[in-house]
Length: 553
Image (cartoon, rainbow, N blue to C red):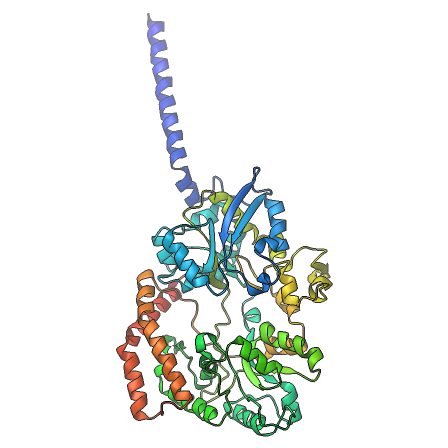
């Protein structure tokens, strides 16, 4: 009887323990996703093992297409790096590209419809309400825990580079996208600036201008001394271009010479608005004088890219602001056979009353608001995160930046060197178009863009001198760091600045082209109008965002 009773007690104890064990196991399992995502220890991945999937998997990926790619392919599956990544990972990507020129409209329609792909690559900083709105609306998801668990390569980059992490997260530490990174910073960011016809300068025995006064003297000589040698007074000393008839805004690149920018700028550690400062009035007066004296293209307000290209490649324009590859490199290549004497030189950013060579760009940026976000419709989170993270691995980095070793590049003394497939393309493609068939470094994407790609794409000494000297050795203190307003701030800021920008651009054109005289009365009316539209509130919003940015770890 005692034995029977003891047996019953023992069985009860065993049963009770098993229940507790099961409950504990169940609790661990049900909370495992949240718990391990936070701790990241139980199932944290330390490397991306290939293939990522054993069974075929297709993910949809919405991404604007670069024009260089569209010239030779219908979608990004035509890029050999992505073809190779598919072979290695086992994941097929169905790329969805909005029509070129309609990216913003198509993005807004997609987000409004909630008919979302698995991955969305976009400039999230340009979205009304910012990425915070997309997160709060439930369109995209927060990535911190997923990166901690399944993205060892991006995780390492962010851990070892707090400056990059600071630039790609929101104020509360949220990471909303796999970012476009340039860890090299300034040496790859100084990629545009003032450019002159060097052969014109040489013909007239002129030096590359350094100051605003130097610029004036050179532009007068270009206007009066027939540097194109056709016996006609048809030279356009300075030209520019812009979209939607806003070529006049190109002249805003001269504003830094007065210690301001043609928009928000840093003013002794605070954000201020350049177009209402007294120095901006002086800048406008100088531009108006240059325009009146026909030192500036009289059609600058309406020039599009086609007109801009025509004036430079038909020996009409003597100077402009442009990109080191898309303008300088392309023009030098185009004109090599047509006009062997054609030559360009990058000029330093002009020094004016402010006394320094300021640039418009924040050259120290390493992490951008461009990035690949994961939508809330995605049902393959782990696989998607690993596929995106592979692009930050050593193998993925080389593929996305240089293409396939032995074909588009080879290692020479430890340096990935492009082959003749890129620089002497058998189909006659320009180097950027040729590289576009192999890698995405010529554009942008969820990757760390390698400066060694950039160094090689600067094919001429003129380009190297411009990007690595003239435009790099500048003062960047006027430019804003990559601050991010909150959702509410962003929407309010857009409401204020949409009308201010329209009015300011209209008045800038009128002042410069002489349609409106710059005097005390007109200037006061202009400033008061902008103030009445809410610029002080906008400045306050920008400063609040700057203060939060500066407090990020």
